[in-house]
Image 1: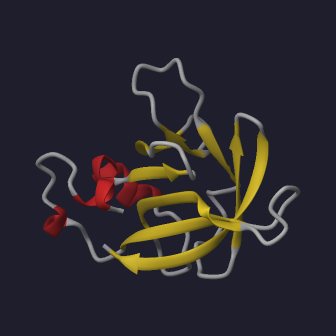
Image 2: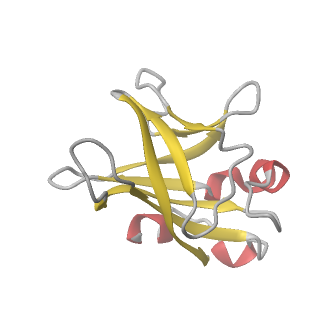
Length: 137
């Protein structure tokens, strides 16, 4: 989370109140029968009244929409929430472009409400995460 608070020279006080810090934690799956709070993502995004990502606010303030991918025994990956052609949302860590994005499966229609589930396509396939927290920035 500290990685989301210190981006260089961004004035976080100027953000509209719709911006939230969202934490996703791995839901139960093969190899993790109870899920894992140590595997997931924390990202900043503007949410509308229904808890969906607001593409208009994202467009205006996309530099603030950062993501941290966390895993045990690995350094955090730090990147951005991006909108791909066709409207899909993804996490991008490599600005140069040779690292694949991690695409949110139906993020454009998913609601980011505590307890709900969302999926992210990673290098090794689709994984389900539970929304663990949604807090004002």
